[in-house]
View 1 (tube, rainbow, N blue to C red):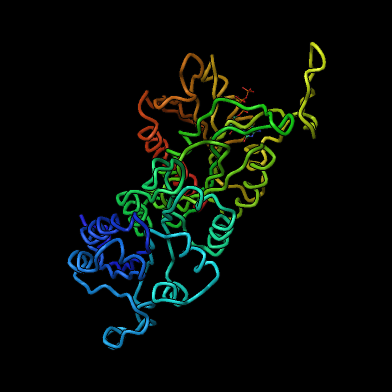
View 2: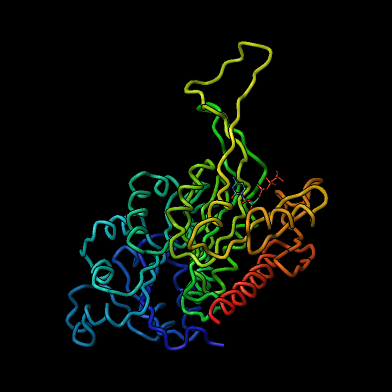
Length: 404
Ligand code: CTP
């Protein structure tokens, strides 16, 4: 199987220690049948040899903007037109800054500016550099222009730090590239999902929250990308890396989650509400830290808007999938929620006694009008793939019925 057969990929490599992994990425893409043209920055050459990449891809590596010999064979504008997809891995903070500023100071940055092909970047840098406001602003600007972000991952770094900034593994980048070209069942469809808990501020340092880990929602996002969907994930505060190929919007509170969902919902084919949204928030968050001046403390809570119900009530509504976490009478409560929220499908699970939240395994009872299916206990990644299959089956059936 060569899922990238004949695809013309331009692989940009910039100067970070993760550059050595780019050789493995090039190998995987070539093995998938792609034509891979490597373009390296000067700094990248300090980390990996051009001969290695030339041997793997079977094409001379391009480095200089004004190289008479290479320009005669294929000029840089021609190269920019040749590419169907530009992947920059690793992408340093410096590269992201130049790309965000639209600079064309070397061959790679010039190609990024001159191409109309989509650009995906896999950042790799020290965690403090990744967290820096300048880098975050550059990334946000690039994303707002349609650049896709792959990672970065969290973990131990070459410099000894621990945190976000590791380049995604080559196989994960390969998976994301495959998904872009795959004719999955959701190719060309936009899917929006919420995941994780919300935090409702009590004062500047305290909040009301819950135990949701976000794992199920993140597993669903991965499974949706594998089906070719273009996925937007609105995530509450969780410590999970962004699945490859997913556009992620981080939020804290239910109100922020609602705003992010309503900004993203136009054009959405399927909405999956997987987040454990707090049903209530403090009526007013104290501006200063609450002091323990009395023996009791009464909190006034007010209802949060039900994001899922509001989306399901839109005149141009997407196919809506909800979740229900129940401790008892799972089926009856889930049926009631399916009807009350006017959903197309609901996935219910039993929670409590180490089931459902904060664990890697889960089981679901999936219900829709006129049918239901039990998905047995298994790792959330496999469960997610099965649930996505059921969702697409129902979605396809509904779309077909609407078109007849
Ligand atoms: N949901 C939402 N916005 C909220 C609350 C819930 O979008 N403010 C979504 C969740 O993402 C989930 C489903 O609605 O898909 C859960 O429904 P809900 O009735 O809130 O479940 P519970 O909180 O378990 O309800 P109850 O306490 O009534 O059992």
